[in-house]
Image (cartoon, rainbow, N blue to C red; front, side):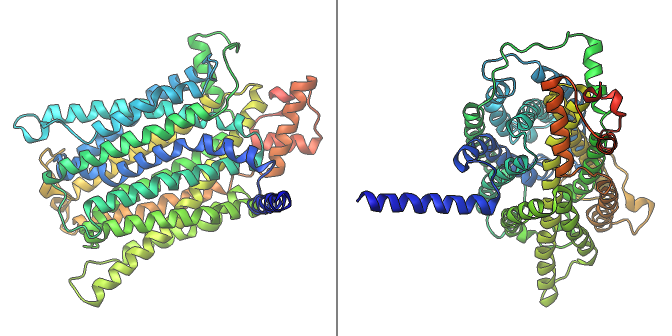
Amino acid sequence: MHRQDDRVGGMTVAIGERIKKLVGIEGDAKETLVPMVNYASKNIGDAAASQFIGDFYFLFLTKIEGLSTGLATVMSFLRSIWDAVIDPFIGFAVDRTRSRLGKHRFWVILVAVPCGVTLALRFTSFGLSGREGTAGRLVAYHLCIGLAYALFQSILDISHSSMLPTLAPGYFQRTQYTSMQYIMNSVGMGPAQIFGSLMIGLRVTRVFDASMRPLMLKMALIIGLAGIVPILYSGLATKERSSKNDVFPPLNIKAFFHEFSLVFKNRAFRQYFSMTFLYLFGSSFFGVSKPFFLDEVARRWDLKSQLDIWRGIAEMLMFPVNYGLTKKFGKQKCALLTLPMLFVSFLLGFAIKPQAAGSKLLSVAVMLFVREITYIIGYSGYGFMISNIYPDITDVDEMITGRRREATISTFNSFIKTMTGGFMASVVGVLLEWFGVAQESTKVPLFGARAKNLYGGFTPSFGLKLSNAFLPIVFLGLALVSLRKYKMTREDHELISRVIAQKHEAGAAEATEEERAKLEEIAGKPWSEMWVGC
């Protein structure tokens, strides 16, 4: 009996070792995987909420609440300005938090419940949209709830993401943590997509109007409250060093602004900022206009649920591909190899034309499904790369400043995403309203003039192709140029880690002239002006 147990135990260990070797886990599988799962579980609730908002919130505001596309997206821009104001204070507070739980976990636990509650409140207006003379109050309500949700979400994102560089100090170890986050994203996004699709029907034949208001609120309550659990679990289960006795630099206005000015003295961060900024511009044009493109240009709104499920499946399938490409070729190569598929997706947008019936209608459906998967291939590869290189930026910052300032840098990471997303959503929304998109359901227009008054060819379909195909190509092309300028490799990161460790341990770092030149190229500062070179 004992021999049989030993054989079973030996087989289990052997299988575990093979899986570990295949995936490329560095260190003991159990000791590595459990912390990864604990940390990344937050992404289940976060991704489900993000997916639900992306799929339905803009439609809820325009088709059900009656706001114009311009007004709905201007509110998004105002939320992004709010984010730009509060994010520096959040990052500053997180970096200076003293708590036995650690300076990051404390905040994750604190905002878990508020995030879920405010998500649900975004999908109701307590009857304001059905009353006469309440348009101003309706806009004010959605704006205030949006600002509250943005506050709690920013605290969650900044505190959670800034934990990663210290939890995973190794170059490829961070890729493993990021990969686990992508797995958890799929665990959250996939069911959320399927849940939403089943609730509204696999063939979307019903119109988004006031009759769907109770259904939207029910779905938001389920997604929002269910998402609280994995976020709380992540905050409670992740192990982080206590910061209760940490000592921080003096707190004053000069120190506050100096902390953030130091971030942009890091060339690696400036490159990261540029490639992320341009990428988000292109993807925002596509994402905001996509539901209206499906309805107005392709005339296949009935396929929305099926395309959403198709997208969810494609996202899950792309994770192992992106992981394998990153492991074999490096973090940037993953994006360079997959990015061409984005251009294929956008170009297909020009080829799609509304058809009445028959085989041509079928060809539109095929192009929509092909377009969806080519978009996910390129989008996921670039996004995986962006997530992977972010923790390495914090090490370059430590090489320059001599301090770990993950939350401060994460502030700008959050700022890029929220400010760009909000600004671009407003730009696209105003553009679509100007071209007359969703004009028939608009109760609160932003302005009265339309593009067709200027030129008859400026139809809603023209505006949608402009925002869903042409402009994304322009910005993704610029993002590709920016990506090629980022040069940090695994060997470079190992060099950075070595000189930092030497400086901490011996008070001085040793590097050859060639190594110093490489570090100066990455940091954008002379060796003598960096902390490691002083």
